[in-house]
Image 1 (cartoon, one colour):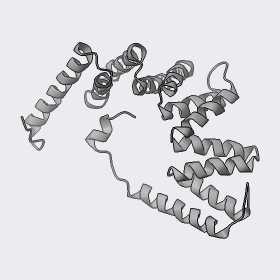
Image 2: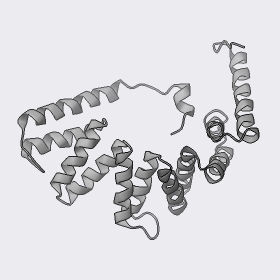
Image 3: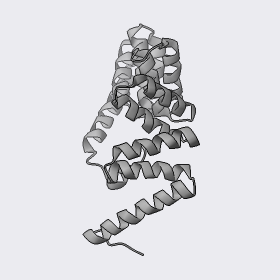
Image 4: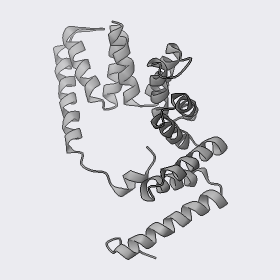
Length: 218
């Protein structure tokens, strides 16, 4: 059946059927990806974060679904439970969720949980960077900048910039202009400055969030 999503009654029917399909796929067919969608549905559409959290946690613990582990970590962190968040984020990182590597790494580096190890935090951030998470690369560049390790700072800035981090591009421009961490090049400095401004313009042009974007994994 095709729905006219401009009509309120048909929108309500569509949303109701969507929930039924997700529940069947999760509870009857035991599909991990559908269980995660059910969590998204409960969170974004039904506004029931308590039920959504339970679905995510069960899907993480019973089915090892990385995105659900990441969501569980996010809920735990919001509930002021950094140790619980760290457990979920580290599991999600091991399952290939780069954003979780970032979060776990920052918890370790910033010592927000007990028995944190800085080197482990750096390793987790490196995994996030290797997984194309530009924030992880940028934080690593910042750490190396603070420690005056300019070659490493430049390396991670280049990686972050290539992944679309405008701040890394701006920092990289300054590094090339001053010759920090390697060659000095006005040409490359101007090139990375232009890239930073281009990314800044792209951010300004982004407007709103679509319905689909609101319920997909974050």
